[in-house]
Amino acid sequence: MSEGLNHLLSEFYIENTFNTKGKLSVALIMTRKAKEEGLPLNPESLLTDKGGQVKGLGGGAVQKILDEYEIHRVLAREGGRTSRGSIANMEIYVAFLNSIYFKGFHDLDYVEKFWIEKVRDFFASQPLNINLDQAISIRATIQHLLDQAKERQQENPFSQYQGTVIQHLVGAKLEHLNGEGAIIHHSSSTSDSQRGRPGDFEVGDAVLHITTAPGEALIKKCEENLRKGVKPIIVTLENKVSVAQGLAENNRLADRIDVFEIGQFLATNIYEIGKFEFKGQKDAVEKLIIIYNEIIDKVETDPSLKIKFYG
Image (tube, rainbow, N blue to C red; front, side, top):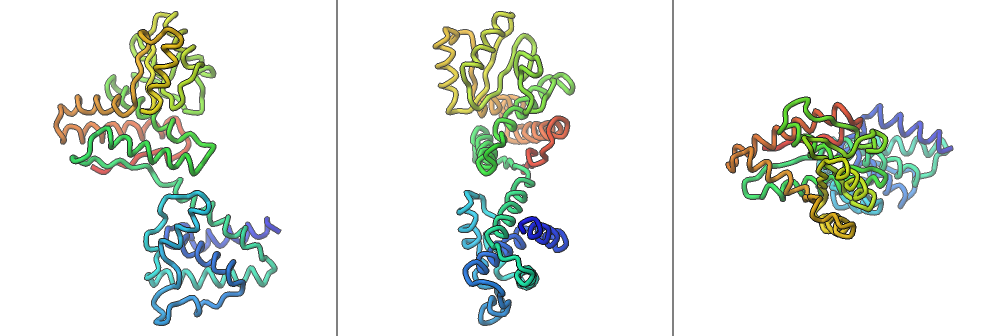
């Protein structure tokens, strides 16, 4: 039964291009309306008295449904309530719901979950963004970018968005400094042990380890780096710096391992390349993001990891 329903939903989704914010909002609200009132629905009863709006199709109502599924990003602030297109979309979708009802498909929980997954797909297809504002510090700007990655990771529990973004931002910075082709980049899904490499990046006589969760295994790698005569550097999240430092101290390596917070690690470089002038910083960030996106194209398969730069 669910296979047949999924086929009909997928067919409707493709044929009617129900993949935009407004159309997804219509699908969510009308499905919830059908769950509450039952099918079939009368499309005329779903319009306001003057007929110019779809009842209940507001951003708040859409967000309330998304919140139930632990999706906290905003799909549509107004939900398309006053759009003439939304009325047409409502009529098309209600006709579809009524048609599947008469075919014997009554599982509206399944229908709602179908649209929730399409909302997840919509968000996942959107690039991350970075907006350079002279009133905001570079470090805070970077943190905002990482917060987006963290939020996306929370919406997709088995993903590693934040760690992947950090890894390739550092890789982009290193390539910016050392020139094209000087740095070897790897997919985030490939571990150091699988690569047979001492860390994420080798530069000069140093090895960089990029992590969102420093642990004993990482310190053992650093210890091995030191035995082989290379300098280990850990780059991690702000709230993990003390963890990495504590682990190093517990292993009597505190004076031999450098630990940097990712925001400061990148921001310092941007200030220096930009010669401490906003225009220069803007150019440096734009170049960093260009290199980063090129790396994503080369070694990753998920285009949603890309970053859109707003200067």
